[in-house]
Image (cartoon, rainbow, N blue to C red; front, side, top):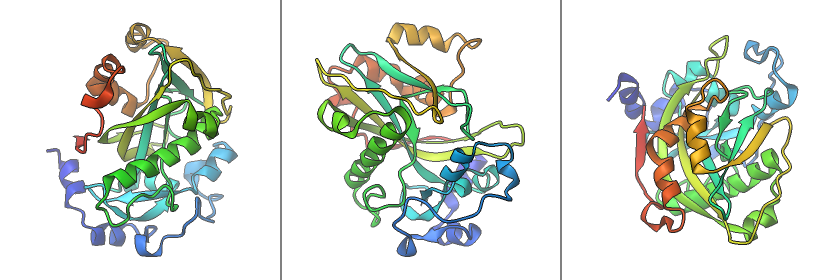
Length: 280
């Protein structure tokens, strides 16, 4: 294990709540998507898009090493590299949408994004919020409840980022939970301000045969999108001059994606894996 791995593993709930005063304990959490805090004087936001700055007030779910809910903190708090380096961890999800021809939907993150702008990534990657239908089981005993909550969050963000209507997602295909990965990555922004440290729930959404989904991207979130075959995507991964990818997507590609792609017809042997795979 790395020194960082040992640090994160060693943090108790009490340690987390003591070391990060911005965290609201789970017993006192507001059932709201965002907090009313001021970002006006934060140097980290200098030069960034106003809409994306507002989204940094969203209430993310703070975790311990075992994916147990400890409390809630703003997206800003969870993504500051100074906090991440001290072990602060939150919950996330990554969705991979495949159509009935086996093509994967990719997006390129918009230039306005504060973290990892203009990088290609999977269909949608974001965070469930500290609200009743996205936080899951706060008693930390029911993974299935967490998965359902993450699916709710995924539906919300697929609409927000890519304009995919909720009714189409509910009727034209099915979500499959694959596993969870735990990773950390600095954003490598000029001021070295931002990063990610997440337990990431991996979801595949398979569009039913003969069905389709509407895509109407939000320009503030998505610069471009494409459907790609497995063969074409393998070529993209080697074309570093034209395609750069987010760190979590690269981890998933290197360890899992092509195995899953080969089993799209029947995901039963790879889905509902309850393990957390550590990449830190």
